[in-house]
Length: 398
Image (cartoon, rainbow, N blue to C red; front, side, top):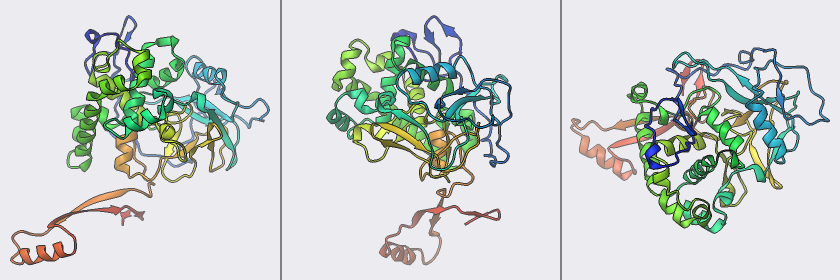
């Protein structure tokens, strides 16, 4: 599972341990990698097959449901328990349903289905799909208990993602005693995969990373991995400085309780689903929102965003939906390289995609020195990198 439950340093599992269970210690699940990224399909082609099953809904009792839309089967035991937890802990009835769809897995021929948030009834642009109260949102304010401590930690050596990942790992150790048990269980089930069922390259094996040879993405993966390791080495400092964590877990030194590979899995899981809230305090800026990603489908060309409004996080849809259709939200102005690294997918319709171009002067050119001086006077180097926007028109990029 992504957020591991190591009880002691001796129980550490290697990065590619067997998915078998041992007592109460969940071994690290083998990632389910696809050999190539699935191409996003058009809306007319992406309608899901209808299965004869019950849809686990979070509908308002007063809202009239539309006719059953094309949707995949929902899981009564998993999605149902997650929905019950949300409603029991204050989620207002909304207009969405949590459905399940099968995803082919190339490893072992097994099918690891994904949950997703779909319209529970017909929706129009501007409708409020759901509102999640802040009491069900995980932020640094909740983790650290003091906003000044949150500011101190996140402006020093630790990112918000590292703090949130450490908190969820500690909470998972509590098992069913944790308030967040159903949510953590859902994150474990998704295993850091987006709705295209591909994990971040940060979790790929070396042989799978070979597919990125010749691409700048390979170096970006290495740099990000090194950054995660540096943050792991600072976890003990966070534990000592954050009185709330030290008080709750006085005998669980982070780097002794959780090996690096487990922290990395949790970090990538948090990275894939964290929401950047606007117009809130620093301690609430990065948030884990139940019903948010990875249950929502990311797209680059939509306008729907999760926003903080009056003590809750709200989603207004930007387009009409039929019952059963996946809800889409904006992933921000990120190029495809960042989408792949953070969420494990690329968007062919991404208006923010960029391509890196490197140009250099020919050192064997007789006028090399003169050209180099001209470049310097204009603020350029002999070897210069440029970022160009990609615009696809009639099969060509401009």
